[in-house]
Length: 143
Image: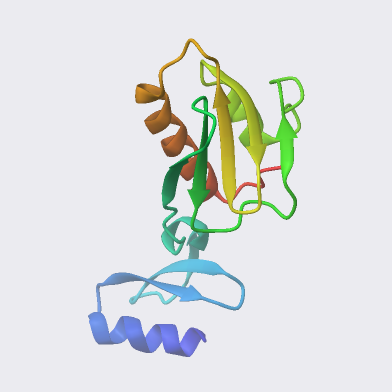
């Protein structure tokens, strides 16, 4: 594997610094062609992560929206009716920090959020979709 990385780097030029990924260990290296001494540069989760897309779906309850992700969120659905109940769930805890959220259900591929009746979905919808997407891209466990 190191030889393959060296060959790729040499083809790019003697002074080039390029990136290669050792897929076995999941480590991304930065190597100078002059020294050929790889150093840990960063983890592949951010470089090679799949982009998370969130689709927002209305439900029969006008105070509830479903945010559907293009990836698995958790193994088993979990309901939270308060911030206190969600304290052990990083995603649930984060969503309850958004003003107006009154209940959260984290499903296998979706998150259902109920807002208080006084809040408007206009600003809340975008903020929640963005927060869920960023959280899922971080790779942290939702529950």
